[in-house]
Image 1: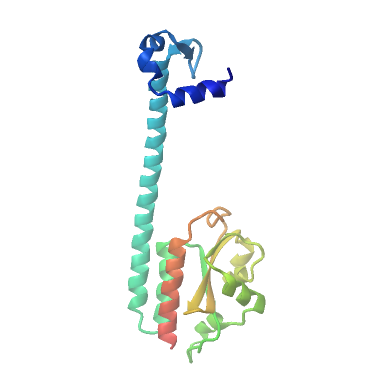
Image 2: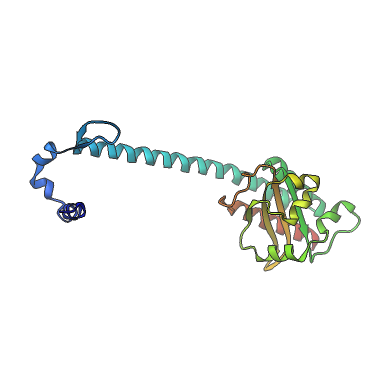
Length: 220
């Protein structure tokens, strides 16, 4: 008989060991973590302990993720409150940059807007409405979720000024007015692992939606 035949037979006859209970006491198998042999009962106990240990590790990981998400959620809430209280574009811009750089500890933050009316009389706002190339606009329009990953020569890296040359990882978030893409929010870091392709983008999407709503409200 092949091993598969024995496995299939035991699966098809779950009462086999009820009829041959003495066999369990006489069967010994190699110890999984050393020399010698142990009974099937002992092997089952070891297997259960390993499974319990794996479940405990998984539970600890889930708890850690939950705690991290709670912290991020609180930061997003504070950002939302600040943006909601902004009376004009200057206040919204200031709240956005302050919370992202200080509360979220993002080293470099910048954004660009297009197809929107620029506020008058403030030169400091000029960079937010500076020209953005058509390929970058098209890239933003085609994004279905925020981008996270290595800085692959993105135009947005130059928005960070001299620091752009040192940026190794980025997060890019499209800013939208309903279905129309009207801007791009960029995060940058010198740490290659700060923004990586496998990271979750749920909260980044929330930040993009909050930013879009606040900036559009103060401009329109």
